[in-house]
Image (cartoon, rainbow over all chains, first blue to last red; front, side, top):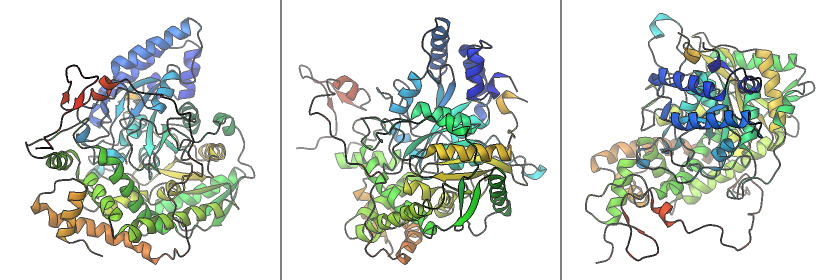
Amino acid sequence: MTALTGLSIAAVRDGLAERDFTALELAREHLRSIEKARHLNAFITETPEIALARAKESDARRAKGKALGPMDGVPIAIKDLFCTASVPTTAGSHILDGFTPTYESTVTAKLKAAGAVMLGKTNMDEFAMGSSNMTSYHGPVKNPWRPKGREKRDKNLVPGGSSGGSAAAVAAGLAPAAIGTDTGGSIRQPASFCGIVGMKPTYGRCSRWGIVAFASSLDQAGPFARSVEDTAILLAAMAGHDPKDSTSAPVAVPDFQAALKKSAKGLKVGIPKEYTMDGMPAAIDALWKRGVAWMQAQGAECREVSLPHTAYALPTYYIVAPAEASSNLARYDGVRFGLRVDEGGTLDEMYAATRGEGFGAEVRRRVLIGTYVLSAGYYDAYYLKAQKVRALIAEDFRKAFEAVDVLLTPTAPSAAFAIGDKMDDPVAMYLNDVFTVPASLAGLPAISLPAGLDADGLPLGLHLIAKPFDEETLFRAAAALEEACSFDAHPPGFGGSP
Amino acid sequence: MSLDKATVRKIAYLARIRVPDDALDGLARELNHIIGWVEQLNEVDTTGVEPMASVVDIRLPKRADEVSDGGIAGEVLKNAPEPVVAPGADGGFFAVPKVVE
């Protein structure tokens, strides 16, 4: 491992402040590790010129004693769902071919203003629809982790999805941190599959302006890093009210890092008894139990709670999210940007040809499901019904949080699976998000942190959920759990090591 | 409920997604599998439950009625697959197939 590519954000900030290395050296080392790891396909667009220019600017600011941002000189990777001015933004889709935004998303603009150094745009499931990164038009991402054992060693695993490239990049040491988006688990599930920390803030904590929309009542931006502290640092630089997003909450951003220093003593942790699934590997159940013991050892009180509508969260999500997607994706019509397929027919034929060719199979499926559940005669039976069940799911959480401060669950019902698996059965793929979707429907903040390895040597995550806008308690609990499980494994090749 | 080939053809038209005729049967099977699975929601008693459209309980903010944006026709047209910049016009246009005879 080269020294610079394995560092945390906190260590990078210290090293830059102590003049142990420059932002330019950091950027160069990370760009080199990205080049060496191109076989992972973690990036859709690498931006070395931007990275080197921003690193030089950061070094110049520091040399001149100018004011520095909280991310000054820190390299980061950006999911290719965030619009970035003058840098192509694909959302993992063919239909955005040739699209180069003329504007910058609020979150990436804030990170730029905070001094962060963008390394590139990461691969993802098309329009963030997927749990394996297999639906990307730009090809699958390889998980840097490899299963132990001779017969399994040659199998390439998925990194999870939809933010698969961001998770793989951080796990492989290509960036100390990355940003992603989470609609039903798209940060937390890949974090679990790649053995890193991934966090979805409360709905409304980060601005959605300039993020390619999937399901607007669920989408949230969030951080990936290799420690809980680093996700807290990164979130602080991303969060905050934005007048350009009417659903962004006009609330102050607390000092997340300060929350990490509070002990978990007296914290009430709920263990939802419904968070289990047929066929779930015993290793995940065992890790969950260890998680309870770890929290108790840190002074927390654990008690069983009930969230009776948990089993209905996933089917609810697969009505609400496609319905919103079918509406959001109506804008891709070949007229104003991206791909146009014009065979000399009518305008309607141009729309249909463009969308038929521009959208991949999973996106087509979801747009059609969404169109169906919103269509005349079916709206009440499907869409309205799902919105009512969503209310019951949110109410379950509200009641549970009357008695406890956070909830502890597994992140995903399996470890990373092989590239190509579950592709013939959409519903089997959807089940990946069974433990992450309920918190999404209720808009709650949640975090996945790596807590152990299974018998194949693959990472497994534990998942904490907190009350709306109580990220401080979430980080406090996560820091205690992180300390107790002391996970320090890395995949082979981490940060350029042989 | 089950989606037949005609229904799939109709929703594909509503969604403006071209689906070749020979793909309709396979697509109908896939969509029926998903719709059949989400129909388990019918087990839940939702009598008297208000539908939830948003998790944020805030009123939509209002702003002063002032021009805050605009004058960027060039930027708006920059990504157009086939932009038309009309001479003398105060901006350009998006070109589309002829819609009026």
